[in-house]
Structure formats: structure tokens, C-alpha cells
Amino acid sequence: MVISTRCVVRRSRETSTALEVLARSGDDRARALSGRLWLVNKRDADAAANCFRAIKSEAIALHPQVVIERDKALAALGSEPSMSVALAQRRLGSR
Image 1 (cartoon, helix red, strand yellow):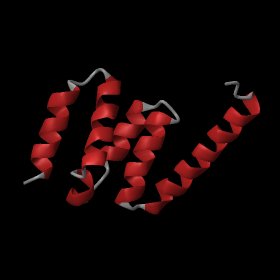
Image 2 (cartoon, rainbow, N blue to C red):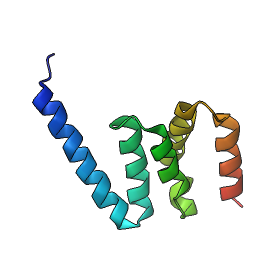
Image 3 (cartoon, rainbow, N blue to C red):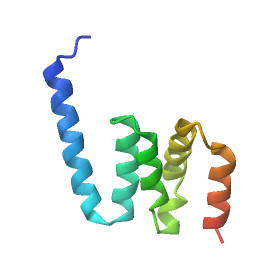
């Protein structure tokens, strides 16, 4: 399968636009989606982890899909012991 450069540039622009809109939202669901976009589309684990850390709602932060994506972002950082950090965050969030 061949993907043209124009298609990749367009997708990158669309992702950047989406991230700008989501950043203005202030909603925890937007923060979760931003984290995923940063990680998957922009390959920026640090920005993704920051989005997941900014989630304030315990219900959103502990949702299984969000937990998995946050764990992926932390693992991608490499400099942190991701599993112990993620577990500690979950323990703190569940109190």
C-alpha cells in the first residue's frame, strides 16, 4: 500500500487542528483523546502523558481505556518506571 506524501501531510494538519480544539475544551474526555492523538499520531509520549496527568475526573482517569492508553504513554517515555508509576497513580486516584 502506497500512501502519498500529500495524504500524510493532510492527516498531520488535521491532527494538529484537532489537538488545538481539544486543548481549548478543558473537558477530561478531550484530555484523554488528546493524549491518544499525541501518542499515536504525533509520536510524542511526553505530551500524551501530560494530557493523561491533567485528567481531573476520577471516573475518566480510572476508565479502563484511559488507564491502558496512559500506561502506553508512560511506557513510551522510558525514563520512568512506567508500571509502578501507573499503579501508584491508580492507587492515589482510587482513594
